[in-house]
Image (cartoon, rainbow, N blue to C red; front, side, top):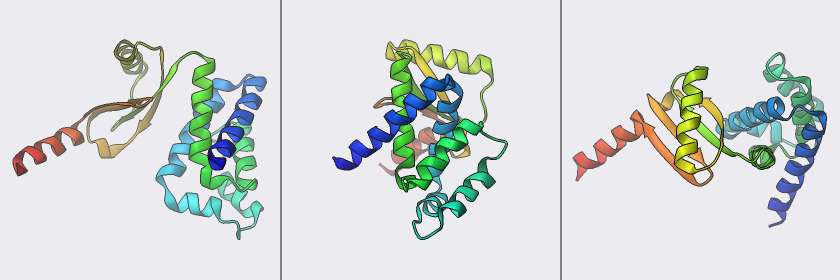
Length: 178
């Protein structure tokens, strides 16, 4: 329970800073995407979490990855989390921050995975469909993930809607086995 409290405390503090600066949409989106990157890359998570590595070196890793890709504000917040020794909890902290931001905007966060990027029209139609399915206004976080092969997987809260080709192939494989 103490770890959850620390995660929530960091997320709430970051949310207040980002919200006060007026950069909520951009910074929250950049933080969310970086959190997913760290979550899916155990080597990066290890490098950023290694307390035996000097703080300056861990921040340099962030610089190498993020320079020119995120705002200075986002970089500063990530550097703060890493130098505070909280990189291991980074995905959870940033996920909680996204939830707080969505709550403040009175929307639900939909984590969407596709094999290819979606254009604005596709994102708009998908957001409308997910809103209709969940009964909530939805804020899309689109992550390109070639492993889905094709189609779309969406997670809104605890609800997962998996319309990927990968999932269909798994279902077909299960049917053939039985």
